[in-house]
View 1 (cartoon, rainbow, N blue to C red):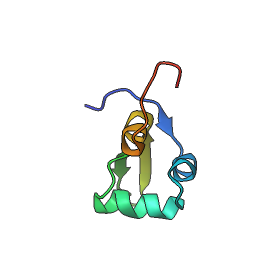
View 2: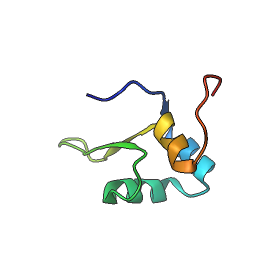
View 3: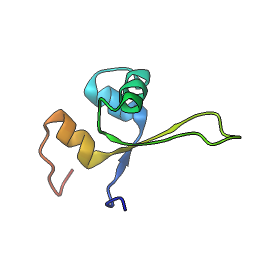
Amino acid sequence: MLEKSERVPVRKAAEMIGCRPSEIHYRMLQGEWDLGVVVKAVPPAQRNRYLIFRDKLYRFMGKEITCSD
């Protein structure tokens, strides 16, 4: 079961990291970046969903997590 964590939109995460959203999509799909979960599309859906969790994003960026964040 997933721990409860605030989610961050892909665009916002890309802005924080300094890359394009497509870079996040690619690297998460390849398993290179652990920022959250990739929910693979199940027909009739055509697009994967990318759930980015704030605590994982901050750890990835080397940022300390505080209660005020």
